[in-house]
Amino acid sequence: MGIATGLGANLPATAGAIVAGAYFGDKLSPLSDTTNLAPIAAGSELYEHIKHMLWTTVPAAVVSMIIYALAGFNLSTGNVSTPETMTIMLDTLNKMFDWNLLLLLPPIIILYGSIRKKPTLPIIILSSMVAALFGLFYQGATVTDVFASAVSGFDISMIQRSGFDAANVTSEVTDLVNQGGMGSMTDVILIAFSAFVFAGILTVSGSLDVIINALMKVVKRTGDLILATVLSCITMALVTGNSYLSIIVPGEIYKDTYQKNKLKAKNLSRTLEDSGTVVVPLIPWSSAGVFMAGTLGVSTLSYAPWAILCYIGFIFAIILGYTGLGIAKMTDDEQEDLN
Image (cartoon, rainbow, N blue to C red; front, side):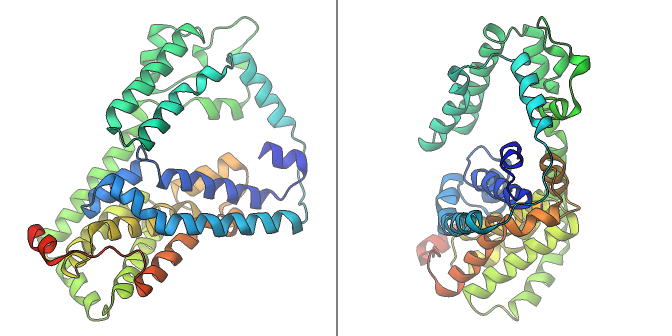
């Protein structure tokens, strides 16, 4: 956004491209919370789920980049302010930290583990340990700071450098770096547990049977089932504004139906992400939408049309459902094994 401001580029378009790119990476990362949650809710396997998402995510990304390239040559610049804030932020960060290419090692470890399909937890621990060592020996952090960051998140007061005064740091820098830690995941875990409990209540009470029977009256083809899943996820996202609920509840509703129609679980998990995870940042009252708008300085409704991947992915999912392309079918033996 700082570069776009300096160039006088269209800020809503830039913000939309940032959101789309972020969620492209989020969808295909084996370390993403929603990417792990979708196959759990659907009953598929993580790396099969990621590979299957390429059918919808790659075309959506290609279409997005083509539109961004065309728009970049034709869009007139909007009213932009001076990049003074960004300059101050960069100067402050330079005073806070020492920068070196070695600092890229933790994300490189994550990327290596993702490409080589290594177990998620050991890769996360290894990357965290390397980052902690860099903090200790390169950034001058104390052992107490390292453990405190892991538990409750980083705080700018941990920086002890000559010429740096944490009290004079702008709120933009504070909001950027004061976060993280295992404690910050508490809300996510509680929401996920609550969603599973809610889905369990729906199952035991027989409410799911009522919903499914009503849907099956109009669902005749695979495309109809995919469309019903997409609409359910979007509805859940609009009502709750939460990525986890928009994945877990529809996943519980449609899991058995996909199986009965000889559709592999990875079809369901892919659709849950295409229409649940990536739609939430387009909703102004969702936590993701609020965060994106606050971070990027552009309202949700302004950047939403430009976050192309976030809504074109489920369009490709529906098209594949009706054409049969990229739809994984179960054999009779596979269906019997599940039963």
